Length: 239
Image (cartoon, rainbow, N blue to C red; front, side):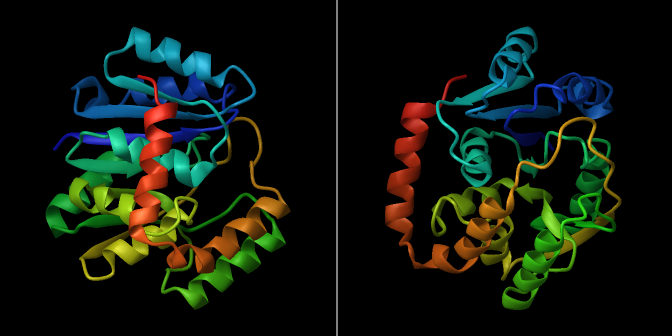
């Protein structure tokens, strides 16, 4: 089972060396069973160049360079668009989500025959009251599990379905819930690590906007969403 790992990156220059070291040590990566897709989301530091350099040095790595900051949700969709694996992992670049968990998630998917294995955080290091409030609200409005985040392994067919749901800026976990609500989904409890470097990219304004899109996103037609997304891909992607 080949796995594509999609990692959106915005000003993650300080984390990339550790990210590279951790993936380089993974047995699945060494065996060529992981395709690593790094999506530079219009970073203002040298993240983009570091990603390109890594991809040029390692054929298992793909660099996707967005020419502007399109937002975390669109960056994830761009990565899914080009992914070729039988399963697709979504994870952050800051290593709070453990690359070592990918093999365990793969084993869980094979054993359970689930369409999705979704990470559920048992702890948090960002003690932000607004974050907690908005996440709690989201679990009430949508049937999301407390602690459910973006970290997951999706079967390719399910992941590709996400491309045609709602507004391109719709929060990923809501989009995933909508696509998977009639499919088998299993949860993968895990403990997050502290960030290797940097801090959260979500300020209060971005968090409120993201929460609002939980509601607004479903009112965009699938056809309009696809039109916007394809335009973004055609003009903004480089390999």
